[in-house]
Length: 247
Length: 298
Image (tube, rainbow over all chains, first blue to last red; front, side):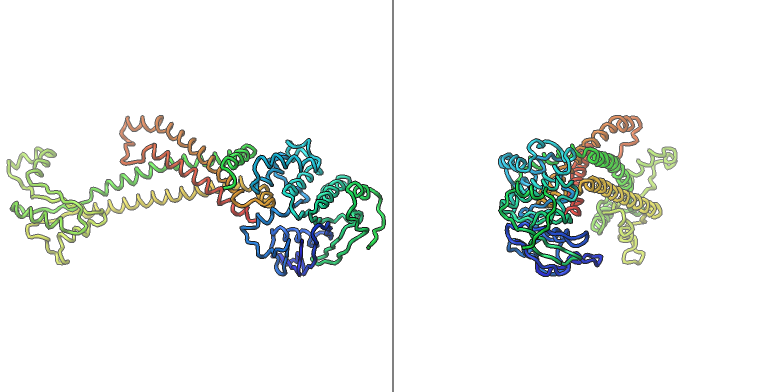
C-alpha cells in the first residue's frame, strides 16, 4: 500500500525532515509510527498527502509513484486518503453533519447520496445525537470522532492519523483507537503517528520508530492478534500494562 | 459542471452569514471607494472638457491684401484647404468683419463713415491644437524662406504667445487629471484587494481543510468569487444611491441657480451607475479569486 524508498526530505532551513527512510506498509495493515517531536512523523504524513515533495527518493502509494501526480490531480489523489489530525481541522462554520457532508460534496455526490451516507457514518462514530451541533459545542473526543467520520465517509483505502489522541484524555483516547481499529477491520490501511508509547505497547501492532528522520525500529510488538474483536481490543487497552512479547 | 450554481450560491451566503464582520468591512470599503470614484469621474471629465474646448479655439488667421479680388479669395481658400494638418477653413468677408466690429464698437466705426479698412480673413483651424504652429509655417513661411503661400495674402497671425500659453495650460490640466485618475484607481484596487485579503486571511484555515479533504481549487474558489460579486454589487448599489441623492439634493440646485456646474460633456448618471456597478462587481470578484491563490497553495 505504502512504499517509501530511501526518501529524504530537507527543509529550507537545512534541517532534515527525513533521512533516507525506507519502509513499506501492506494493504489492510494497522501501523504505528512513533518517535519524539522532530523525528519525522509529520513529515511522513505530509509527504503522503502530497503537501510536501521529497528532496530525494521515491514514494509509491497503491502502486502509484507520487512524483507522477501533477498539481492539478492532487485533489483527486487526496480523496483516496482519509486524514485525521491532532487539532481535528474541522470547518468551524459548519455543523457536524455539514462537516462530514463536505467531504462528499467535494467529490460530487448528490444530495440524496449525502443524506443516506452521512447519518450512517455518524452512527458508526457514535455522533447521532450531535448532528446539528457546531464543532465548538463538542468535546475534544467528539470533535475527533467527527474528523474521523469525515475522513472515512468516502471509504478511502488508506487512513492517516497524525497524533489523533494528542489532545485527549486516556479514556477518550481508547475510544478513538477503538474506532480506528474498527475502521481498519473493514479493510482500510491505517497509519497512526503518535508519541504515546504506553498505548502503542498495549495495542500490539506493528511499530515503526523514527529518530532524526531515520527508521530505527520496525517490528510487530506483542501478539499480533489481527482477528481480535473491537470489544476485546478495548478491554485489553484498559487492562494494566503487561510486558510486550515480541513474536 | 458537476456542482450547480445553486450549491455555490448557498455556500457563499452561508459564509457571509457566518463571517458578517469581514463581509461588512469589505462592503463598506468598496462602497466608499466607489463613491469617491463616482465623484471623481465627472470632475475629471469637466476639467479636461473645459481645457479641450479652450484648445478648440486655437486657429490661424490669414489676412488678404486690401485689394484682393473674389477670384483670389477662392484660389487662396482652395490652397489653404489643401494644406496638411488643416481641418477646417472659415472665410470671413470684409463686409461681415466690419459689421461684427461695428457692433462691438459703434462709435469708433462711425468715424470711418462708410469706408472699410478691414481685409478679407480666413480662419484656419488645425486638426489638433498642437499642430497650429506647423500650419502657420505652411502658410507664411513656405520652404523656410519667409514666402507667403499666395501673393494675395497680406499677413498671417496666430496670436503665438496666447496659443503657446494655452497649449501649455491645457496639456498640464489633462496630464494632471489623468495622473490623479490613475492614482485613484490604483488606490481603489489596492484598498479593495487588501480588504478582501484580510477577510480571506481570517478564513485561510478553512481553505486549508477544504484542500485536505480533496476539494479542487475551483470548488473552493467559486463561493469566494460569488461572495465578491454579491459584495461588489451591494456596494455599487449603495454608492449609486448615495451619488444620485447627492446629485438631486446638491448638484442640481447649484447648476440651475448659477449655471456654474453646467460642465460640458460629462458622463450621464445612468452610464455612471453602470460603470460603478461593473467596476464594483469586477474588482471584488477578481480580487477574491486572485487573493485566494496564495492560500490555495497547500
